[in-house]
Structure formats: structure tokens, C-alpha cells
Length: 312
Image (cartoon, rainbow, N blue to C red; front, side, top):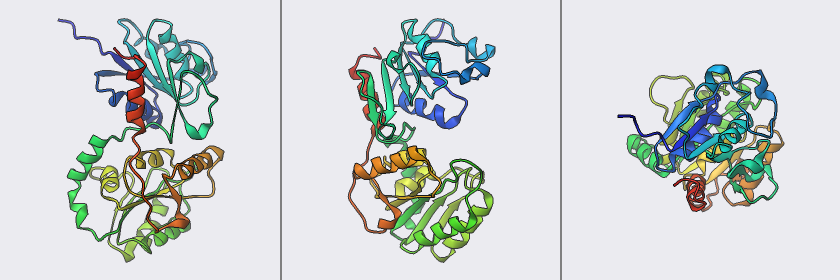
């Protein structure tokens, strides 16, 4: 017997962060989905405003054959023409992030900080799409229940790194760590690929004055990021990381943004949008607590897809 085709395709960009945005939407729909891996050829750099598979490698192009899904979810500029190509074959399309030919998508999900022009198919969200859900946070809280033994207030410190380039300056990491350690009962810190080994060790030294947990990028064991977020009484997130800032919105804890000084216009616009919505404050305002409720933007996107009848 032939397996029932998946009603949803996720066009998975090879960049994990971009693919995660499409996956985050698909996962909240509660329907089976199939990941279609994308691989880019030389023509992918062209901002085509119409449907085309020309940007794909021949091997990636071979995956595009009927039966077609009811819905395709995509993210990123390069996958836009691929989604539009499916749209010409009767597939409903949901695309997140900016792309050429945006009027052709059935639903276009764009961060408020990108200031998109109003359009009938536009849905603006605070931050960017991501894969953190209430269920995943609840599971992480149970998995990492031992963290509740650490002294309060538990401050999750989520550290990224330069938007362009490799490695945060060790002095900057040490300064940030010392600032957070100064008002935390304990610190739950995680470094990322962009932080760099030298900065991570400088951060470890700065946190040595308080009870803490530090997850080093590439370290052994499970990644505790969601556990740190689930048990945090406050979060401090470096301003370079759109993904961690957006994911943090799913918690109920106060969020403080630690600017790094090298963020571009779009990152700064994101910070301002979070401040204006009452969802975050600059690190200079810490540790004064403020009330905020979890913001489930992915749940809102999924509800809008169903409200518009894009998925039977």
C-alpha cells in the first residue's frame, strides 16, 4: 500500500537557522509534514520575482514531483522562487522572511522590525519565526528540573557573537559575565558557535564568583538552552542573536538585551520593536523586574493559516 502523501512540505534551506523558521511554523500546524532539502546552484543568487527551480541543483530539483502537498512552508530569499513555482501548481504557500515576488504567496510572514509595506497576504510578527513551543518548554522544564536547586534569581545568559566575523572579544565576554553575575543568584549561561573559545573561557572566569552552569558550544551532552530558558527568572540575551531573542519571547521572564555595538540597522530595529512592545528592556535597566506574558507568535501564525483555509 502506498503511504499517504504528507499534506505539508517544508522547503528546508541548507542554513539551519533559515530552515528552522519554516519548520517552526509547520510543527505548530499539527499535521504531518515532509522536509524537502534544498541545495543551491549558481542561479540562486538571482532575486527572481516569479516561480522557478533554476536556483536549485539538479539533485535537489529531482525531489519536486507530484503528488503535490496542500501547503508548502518556506523561508529565506532563495527559497521564494521555489515556493512560487509550487504555487503555480495549486499548492498554497506560506513564506517567512523577505523575498522577491512576495505578492504571490498566500501568506507572507515578516518580522515587524523589517517594516514591510501593508499587503492583503502579509502577517507581521514580533521577532522571527522559530521552533520553541509551549510543549517543548514544558518538556525542557521537566528534563532540567535539577536547575531549580540553584539560587534565585536564576538568570539565563544567552551569548551569541559578532554578526559578521568569528569570536566575541574576550574582554567583552568577561564584562558581560561580570555584569550579570553582579545581580544574579545564579547564572545559566550558554555560548554559541559565534562566541568563540577564548570568549567562552573569559565568560567562565567572570561567572566563577556565583553558582552557575555554562554550556560551551560543541560540548558533550544535551544542549540545555531550553532548560535554561524554562527555569530562568530573567533572561539576558546578546543583541546580535535574532533567533535567541525571538525564542525568549516564549517565556514569561523579563528579557534584557545586551547590545554588542556591531549590530546593523535590522538588529537595532528588532531591539526597538521589542522595547516598544514591552517585551524587552536594555541591559542597562537590569535587574529591575517588569511584567510580561509569553508571546506565542508561531501559534498565531498557525492559527492564521487555518483561518485563511490554506490547509484543509
